Length: 229
Image (cartoon, rainbow, N blue to C red; front, side, top):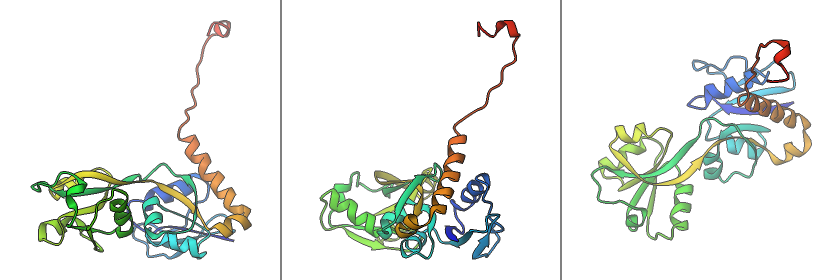
């Protein structure tokens, strides 16, 4: 038996359910209105665990789940010691550094001695250390990060975006990209070494991703034209 942790809600939820369905491993239940925590599937050796995407890296690292699907940003933020198997080609996003549209700050270096609010403190600290920008106070928030510059909590934010619409609505401007994130199938290292079934799941998902890049084209033509064509 292997346990697969998948996001219980949010932007990764529906694409993940669709991916497993296309791979022949449909999840029973688990729709947006469901409060289901565990689900079986058509394969008696597979059980799904519904969890917050942010918790999945640690679930996999600790072995609560053998494999899982989550964002690379969350794996990095949690410093989870897991094996990243395949890029699932959906749900890509960016962590960006942004300031209010009215701010005179135009580059990261100008945030030395200032405050930056974020739900990703580890990645944010790594970013400023890498850029050699000193004395940046990283303020961890648990939500509504976009409003913090407007209420005097911070001069800038590091937040996740996919289309940039949220930034525009909240009158924020991006001044740098902090982290490019993709959605990965991740695995517990001990489970990966011990359970061949994990490779079967990986292959099934890879086959769906590969098929999406292919098209089957049929042409009808006279038999005597086949050589010319």
